[in-house]
Image (cartoon, rainbow, N blue to C red; front, side):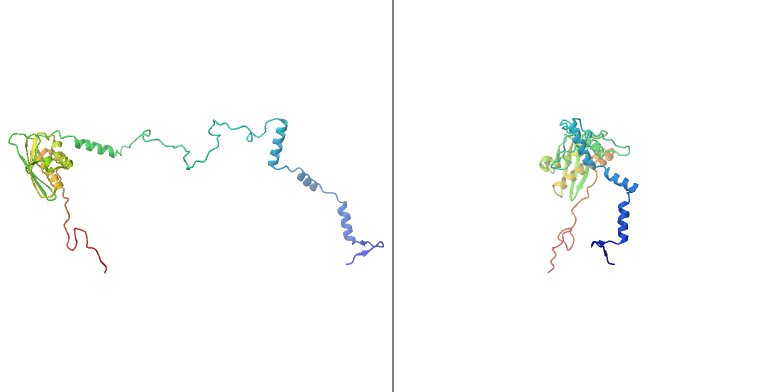
Length: 268
């Protein structure tokens, strides 16, 4: 379609386009379009811009700012909550512990549970106290004999009235057993009965070593006290004086160097 030229040389537009321009230029905006345009004009500014505008107006008028959160007053240094928190070098060092010490914390036990430490302490106190109901005849000719054993050591013991002296293979207790621990173990049976200063001990020993002979002597003295007063069996047994210690060295096995040690294995 070609454009027609007028007499003046101007290009004339088609009749349809000209009609559209006339109609569009003559139309007025509708009521809904006017409301949209007015809403765009009246659209509120951003919240930050509005706050800045309010703050500037407040400073110009000399009145305090409307928002209490953005006050320029300095924080109270005496208030620990308002002071800025400084990050510690070690995490958690600035925190206060929320627990009670052992002294402040009350200890409570249920009816079924009892403290084990108290039971052990009571047992030790009971064992340390001498047997009160021991009745041993201390006549001049009274002799009480027994045999004690430990490992391969054998001790034949004789108890008689005296001052608490020990004679072992013709030597005193301090000479035959220089170790204080062994001496204390040997004296335990008489101390438990309460006759440590009223009876003498005469013993003949052979076999075993020093520790084994001390255990055999203690076993022999305990069994001799049982011969003197059979009513002491319960207390002596409960303290472990009458129990024969069956521990001994394990025998060597054939093909082994000792009880369980094997010869070194050589692959080649």
